[in-house]
Length: 234
Image (cartoon, rainbow, N blue to C red; front, side, top):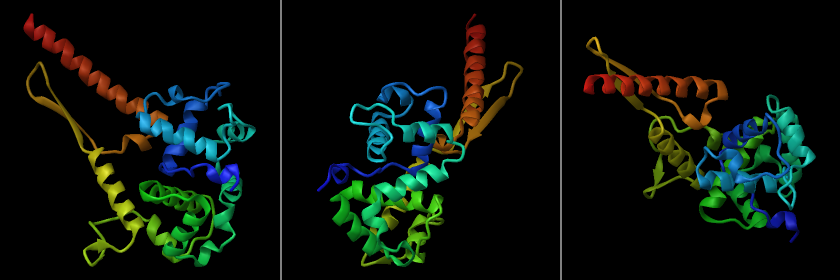
């Protein structure tokens, strides 16, 4: 087995990989480390670094490669660069026709090529499907069905279980997303009455402009509440 195949394929959400590039937009340091994504949980930082290594975005000393520089430079239109990366790093999978592949066949190919198992394998397959769909690869109807979000509850069950492992991933991602949505903040106004703001969004999917706007509103509400509570005490 080559060194390349010993690496772990990305097992983070595809959008997280794309958003990680924004942190490098103001300049790429000589070494890529966790502190670049200090606002992310430690587990996500590890997943990003692992993905960068597998995709050839960093070298053995964690230094940035020319591929990473090209990807960051063209991060608003990453498709051409990412498609070449996918074609290179997923060669064992792409020798087969994705246009006629079933989910069972894809799972077997991941077993053969990357020796993954458990949750890492499920998430790795999900990243692969998201990345190939986003970058112009032709997927079979069987694979496309797995890239669609679950709309209203679990899909049809067989013997008490979801029809495929990938369905379980879809459902789990929906549950996680639901937990990150629905935040509500209420402040009491000095002149009477209350002001409430409800946030229903996945914070990890926000652009930098939206993040600045949302967190600016949160900071303003907190400052107002703190100052007025001090006035009331005085």
